[in-house]
Length: 509
Image (cartoon, rainbow, N blue to C red; front, side):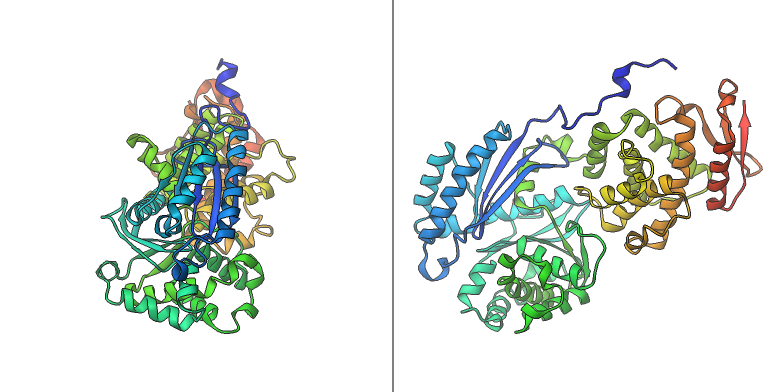
């Protein structure tokens, strides 16, 4: 049973293996700095700030970057250079998109910006912008398939994806600022412009009935509006889904003349509201051609896609959810080794108990095991509630909202008891009945496992659930560990048996 202290205690506030890296994104509407904790399959922002400069505000009519906007952008870059250094970034990658590449004074602006930053700026072509946005979808979703669509201030980039970008995609001049300007601030004219360009577009027709991955601040603001309007319990944007009917209804409401008065609008940043009708117009016309089954909001895009492109191929293939859960276990669990053992132990228990799992459910269970102990430093009375909040809202990718509910509820039930639904009704409303059932079962297994192991490694691999020839299930314990049995443990086993609706015995030897 002896083990080194190093094998148990490895937690710290930051991952030691990572060195911060920074991305500066010079867009048509905003200039943003994101310093990531490091190059990782599951990128975590260490610092994030944006300035809404409106570089492309009048480019459609003047073909120039606005002079005031240029000064604001250059001032922001001076600040961002210092902040990136302050955050310890060992490298800064600066990307510029539609406005900078199209304006006649774009090269002059880029020269000034490079002088401030001290390095070359990568002015993305439309095809490159589309590619990196699609890589962001590949980075942020498990096996994505459909159309990646990145709506900025000056353009929208569309690329088919099927676990990877398919082809170069297209870039269209239908960013929010540009649509607002070229339409003379008429939503009806904006719709007509989009319709004329994309009617019967082969890419959209070929993706008919698929998933539409919506990237960009305007579409995220639309989703925020929808969440507030219908009092959705999670504020997480990434992988928020709308059915086609929900999306159409939302677009129509946002294109209406009195959209500012709509219920839910107060949840949207005032700086985003003016462009919402144009984002709605673009999405509405795309949907008429593509007829997607669902709209999925992406919290990641060009920046994350660019970082993903820098990763070695073997790291790119890693599961982003499991990577994030492993990292959080290192940072917050009493023993990351025990968390990994718990994942294997619960998988064997599910098998012995005759519980079937889909591939996705196995991923979620494994992540839940890695994350089951992250609130151990909290007061015992509050661990369940804190786990529910932290895990349902964590900065994860590669997981949908029912998956978040699975992970959060399993640890909630571990701490609060298997019948404790009073504090979790909102999260339960996100979970499907099957997910809720699996979460309660996993929570019951957690309640047994932690009484067996004291949250430390090397115990669970020696104790296992077995299905005997006559179909009975027993918890089998070696003779030398027979004294681990106790009344409290038996009550936990009985609770598990109640959830499974079957007898579970105790076997020594």
